[in-house]
Length: 237
Image (tube, rainbow, N blue to C red; front, side):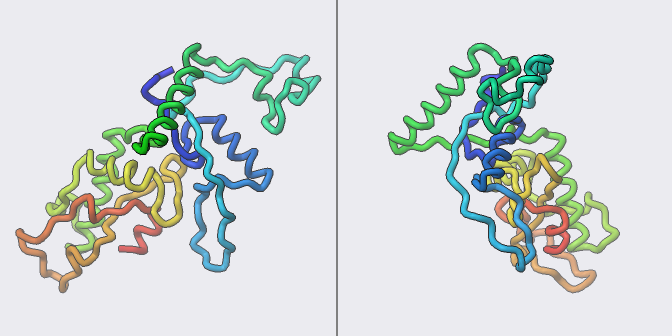
């Protein structure tokens, strides 16, 4: 119902949308991949099949209500009798949707199409903005990693004074740069936790034990950060 939550993005990036998730599942059953699946780091595993480029319109607003239950008659006759092919029980139940929602979805798709034809493609965010609480949690975890890397394993995160990165920077790195996914495995943030860590090692290379960097040493900013799954970030450290 929230008109600010509409998004036009690849089907693989759709979040908080049960229909998009069901559509990805149905396509996968037919051997069609839309991309975005988490990659395995095992070199012996075969490479994933080539993905199709499928754009969709969806709302990343979490569902507030469920579908109406099936009647006994509908259960008896089966979903295929009501025109639902490969998506069980989709067309046989009433979906509580704001009346203007389908029109808003069409307007969003039309706007993106017209911008593309005009040579000025629109690049919307496929995810809703991260909460301030989650951004602060990511930054606290990053400070902990930085402090322990440079000052030792028993140092508290508050000792990290060289991190030049705020809440807006964390939001930018996670959502705008890495699209809410692990840079190595494409793991989605909404499925499993991700962390921020520093990939730019030469910015502040390791020093001998007990030798801290001077106060005028270069700080660590958003351009030095990467979004990874926790085990990969630990291995990188």
